[in-house]
Image (cartoon, rainbow, N blue to C red; front, top):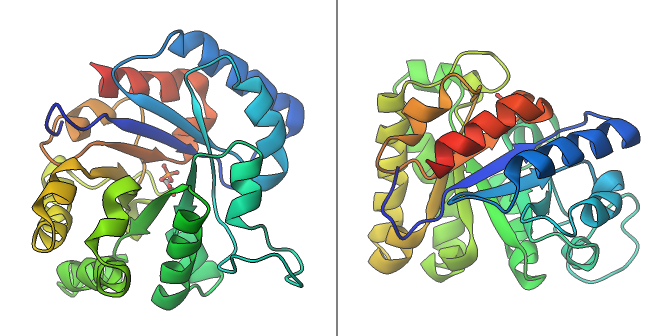
Length: 256
Ligand code: PGA
């Protein structure tokens, strides 16, 4: 895992899963398993409607709360169905996922919208978790570097490297999400190093401190070897974050 200065982050992206009681039980199991915490930081990103309740369940724990998405608009107004960064901060979120591939592919989010959401997250004082990653087709065509560079540069080029000081980047190859097919530690490390290098070209200090998470079929069995790599500073975990024992195993691998 990265240098000693980067606190590993293990984030659970619940996506559109769970119910109120089930979520409360999962949080209770995780809180018991985490205890006073570890070297790593744990973060949970439940669906919007459970955030306020989750904030209360997490009160006496070291576990942080985040959302899966936010509005690109900053000021309140006539945006039916949207939730602003300020509202997320208001109910206790510290982080928000921005530009997840499911948002990009299923809901048509463009790089421009991702940049606007990233900016809105920062304005609200939230730590954006910027997701980038190539599709299987793009990898097979040798476009991984180009795609990831374009997605990172959309933010870097518009907002500058300074905005990454309180942010997190997650490399999530689309072909590895929810497929049970994870990137090899070598494949992931290569892209993580590319991302850090892109940022270092603008600001070496921010790049050195930036947490870059890997996401895509991370589970209790493969986390340790991924997290052992130099530029992999944690995981963004979907499916396995819904299972307390799997998620705690990943957390322990990151804390070790
Ligand atoms: P997965 O999802 O762990 O289920 O592959 C990861 C993600 O989409 O963040």
